[in-house]
Length: 210
Figure 1 (cartoon, one colour):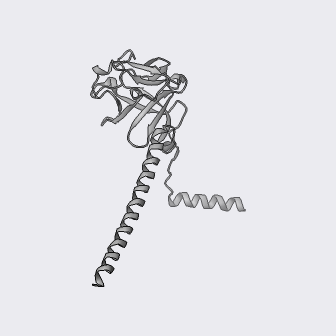
Figure 2 (cartoon, helix red, strand yellow):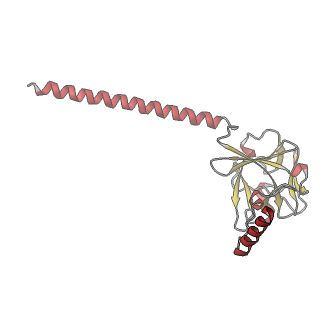
């Protein structure tokens, strides 16, 4: 008979331990959700956003995308102030917002597929998804209107998103550094050091000492 109370107490203790572990787990989960929500609500958080400055070279016009306020075209000159683009990239995924450095307007696509410049880039219409193509070009498809791409005709005028496909040259772009800027990768130049080179350096060093 004495075994029954001890087993009952043992079982109760186990239940209490399990209860406290469950409460602690729920608290950690709630804290994690709070952390994620705070970081998601703040679009300017440095841990979520990367900012780059470059130009978008249009395969069709041979010039660069430029944002002139509400108007956007692909007739910008290399190094032109309206062709300098501030590209905000989300850390998770390839979603980007493209803003003109000079005009401070974002490239957006409305419900009719028309490309316009807007001062507020927080709307979903101003978000594009980067698609990297086999020909080393990049295409930008609307995050809101699936299958609608950013594109320009031969005169540099924007094409309606509903009339674009990924295979069209009008939607192909190449990222370029601003004029006068050197690609960081190209700044590093490697030189092969041979025995002859080492000998020449040694002789030069000895000559300086003497």
